[in-house]
Structure formats: structure tokens, C-alpha cells
Length: 481
Picture 1 (tube, rainbow, N blue to C red):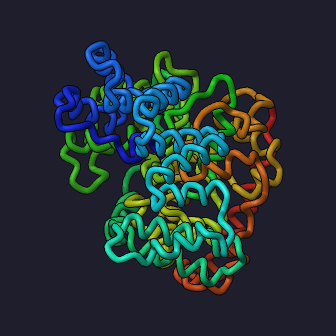
Picture 2 (tube, helix red, strand yellow):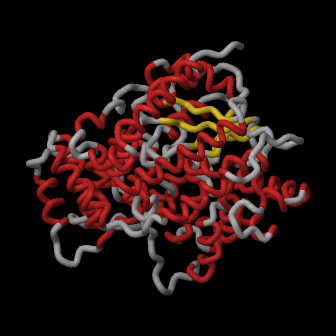
């Protein structure tokens, strides 16, 4: 989760920095962290202790990977204003992303000191260590979840936290009920018809391996359904000394939208026949510039782009960057579905609100994947079995690095040892290293997941998925070096 997505410290109306803040915040919200930081440094001397400016600088440094400086800047804010709960909340978010659960817990306790009924701080502490069902804080969350006038976002957060509490207590039916209630309160809707049109157009559009000089680093798109293990694969790869990451960057989507505007694309795939070599080269330059905004200069030899649903745009990714490699992480669809339902995404991933919409998105994604596999080939697209990865990590990681084109590095066996922040919903799982703890969680929820199983196509569809996953695990378990 990006740091700048958390609550911002609202500057006073008389704050002189406020007049300059809007364009800088626009750069930050667009992911242009290098440009935003440059602008901030130009005005820093005029407002050296301004909390809004320090907050924005912290966001830039955090997203550019200088986490120590980001923390120092946030601590400057609370040093001058110990009661600034928004800044303490950001400190907690940063520390939990860094794996410092003790430090994060202390920061969230400072939030509760100023606001004892902060749903966000309670939920964050519950995420660090799930509350006992009969604890004071669990009771407080239940009370807050029923409070009249509580904003829908806070109520959804509280209900999700209560689901986690019931899950830990072994009350799966109650847990699932809380998760469903939480999802019902989140904004957004899933357009199933639009997704069907997108995939149907892909199936009848020209897709083939691209050739030609790509220039720049080799980009590796780590994709798959959210909650399938993409963050783990990203962490494994970025432990390699030659591999960096731009994280969940919208860069590919931004460049694709620009190409569609320039080519007059009306179907979503017209660009494939209309785009000129000059337009593609300009788009490639634009993409790499966006990557540098995220990772700095110079770019490493290999760059990870880990926006999970880029899996639906593999043809464009490979056409834009002919040397690109595509990795699709494949985890059991019922485990993924359960994880999607039990994860609070705020406004993102509207398809995750019901078993039926999750099933529709899952089938669409796998239909798209099968088409890309058949037309782009195994040299470009790797379907990475999550189960095989956590059960036989060394063999799978050797094969994964071979697909990417990188040499073997034993550091990749310890993704939890990396110093980088984890900015996704998987932040607590990947800190535990490669393990099998997330396998087969679905078995505790067999009854509750019956609607998802049916919507996927019943056991027949799941058996077909399992055979494909077994085949990939067997075929890709070793690589020659």
C-alpha cells in the first residue's frame, strides 16, 4: 500500500506551503516521486519545519526506497506536535511495512492515545497480532462497528478486523459473515460485461512474439490474481543483486492508454494494427522514464513490474518491450478467492466483493492466460505454481531465474531478509519467508466457499485447474545452467 494513500496531515489554512502543495501532491499521486522531491527540495529552505512539506517529502523518500529519511522526517513532525495522530499513523504504517512490528505497535498506540476509538489504529494493531475474541479491544471493535453514523469506510475496516478475530478463534462461519458484510460496504462495482468483451477481443486479435531491439533493462512483469503470491515472487527476485523493482506501478497502463489515444483505438485492441514503430519507441521511452521515477537512475539490468492484473495486457507488454519476460503466479482459486474476500482493499478490486464476481474475474484471467501461453510461448510466459514454489523453493527459484535470464543467487532463497518495504496487502506474510502456511486454508471454509466453487464451474473446473498447475510444477521444476 503506498504511503501517500494513508490519511494526510491537513495543513492550517494560514499555512504558506498550502499554496504550493496542490501541484506537488499531483506529482506524488501520479507516482512521479523524483520530480515531486526535486520540487520539494527547491522550496524546503523557505518552510524547513512545515508539517505538510515534511509529510510530502517523507512520502517521496519512502516510495523511492530511502526509508530511513522518510522515518526521520515523520519523527520531526511528531517531535514538534506529539499529538499529531495522522503522522503517528504513517510512522506505524511505515514500520509495519519494514517488518518492525514492535515499533509499529508503539506508533499505533500513540494514535490511540490521542483518539482511543480510532478504527484504523485498532485494525492495524489487530493485524500485527490478532486480538483475543473476549479482549477489551475486540469488544470495542464490535461496539464501534455498530455505532450509528460511523463512516462506511471505518465500519468496513472494523468488520474486516472482527472477521480476522473470529477466524483466529476458529469460528469460520462468523468470520466469513463479517468479511461479507465488510465487502458490502466498500465502494465500487465490477463490470463483468466489460471484462468479457476485453478477453473476447483478445482471443480474436493478433498476438505473437515481438522482435526487435528493446533497449534498456529487461523488464519482468510479475502478474496473476491479487493474493496469489505475486509479492512473494517479487521479493524473491529482488533479492538478486542485479534485479530491482518499480512495485505496483501503473506505468504500463498509463503508456497503453496513451497509445490508444494516439492510434484512435476504439475496441481496446486497434492499437495492435495501427501503432507505428516511432510511436512504440516513444512509448518505450515514456515507460522507462516512469520506471526511473520509481526506482531512480540508473536502472538495474532487470526491472520487476508487479501490478498483478497486468496479466490481461501481456501482448502490449511484450510488444512494448520485446525482451520482456512474463510471470503469472498461479495459486489454488479457492485459496485466492478466500483471501480476496477476507482482505480489505478500500475502493480497489471491486470484483472481490462477492464469490460470484471473484469467480467471473478468475475465469476471465485464466482464459486470457491460456491464450497468451499458446501464442507467446513458454520462452516468454511462465505460469509459476505457488504450491510448487513454497514446497520446493530452490528448484523453482532456479527455474524462475532461468526464465528471467538472471544467474543463480542463493540470496533469493531468503526474501524475508530484504531491506525493502512491503507495500501490499501481503506485508505480514512475506516477512515470514518462504513457507507452506498459506496452502489449503480453503479447507477450513469448505461450506462457506460453496458459492465460489459453483460459480467457478464446479469441481470439474477446479480439477482442470489442478491438472494444469501440476503440469507446470512438473515441467518447470528444474533448469540447466
